[in-house]
Amino acid sequence: MSVKLTTRQVGDVTVIDANGRITLGEGSATFRDKIKELAGSGAKKVLVNMAEITYIDSSGIGELVSGFTTVTGAGGSLKLLNLGKRVQDLLQITKLYTVFETFDDEAAAIRSFS
Amino acid sequence: MPETGSGDRLHTDLVLDSNLASVDRGESLAMEAAQLLGFDADTQQDIGIAIRESLVNAVAHGNRYHARKKVRLRIWTSRAALTVEIEDEGRGFEPDAVPDPLEGGNVMKHSGRGLLMIRAYMDDFDYQRAGDSGTRVRLIKRVPQPADG
Image 1 (cartoon, rainbow over the protein chains, first blue to last red):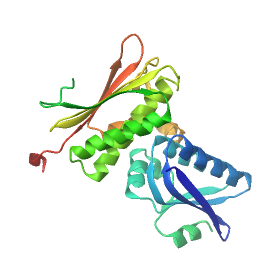
Image 2 (image 1 turned 135 degrees about the horizontal axis):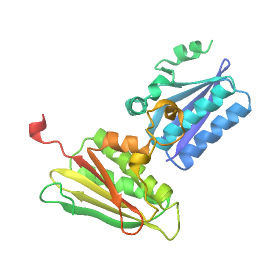
Image 3 (image 1 turned 90 degrees about the horizontal axis):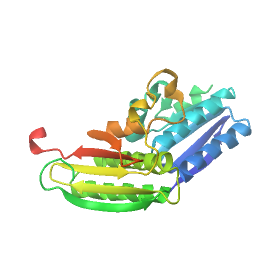
């Protein structure tokens, strides 16, 4: 199974509920396309809910970084919600915990964009 | 034959096409071997990711998805360790020449983290040129022994 992405609006924050695997190929391309689509439509506040992400490889990590760069480059911000232990470990290993703002609570994450 | 201890058994010896389906297959076989050796679920996934990253290096960066170039995957199991060798037919690469993904601006690069993840998840990683061209990498994950606590 690749990744399934569902978007919803909470106020002016676009939440992406991600489910499945973000790996090289279909998963990373799907994520990249979604970020491009949101950036193209002017979304400035993007929250990626990783609760149902079961697996991510270096390509998937690269897409998170590119997504962050794309959204912040357009004057917005991209934050992460509900990281599993494995994704947290990967952010530590890659030093990306210093880059991404992460949350365990959706309401707090939404408030942080204000 | 790996030098990881006595009783090494060849679990897998396959010649794979240079595509992402091969990456998925190799990852599954490595995780299956890890399960047979009694690694816990987390470690099985660590091993799976490391093998995936190595196979991606071989298929995508080594063989560049070339239809005629193959990847050889061998997996040995023993009471001491899981050993995986992956050999491509690419132009060869020098892992030590890959920019450090933890250094300065490299942290924000799109790619370049595969080797870091392999080294983080496996106990040993080494590489050598294979024949006239190509690269052979060897990854080892040792089985925890009772004395390890």
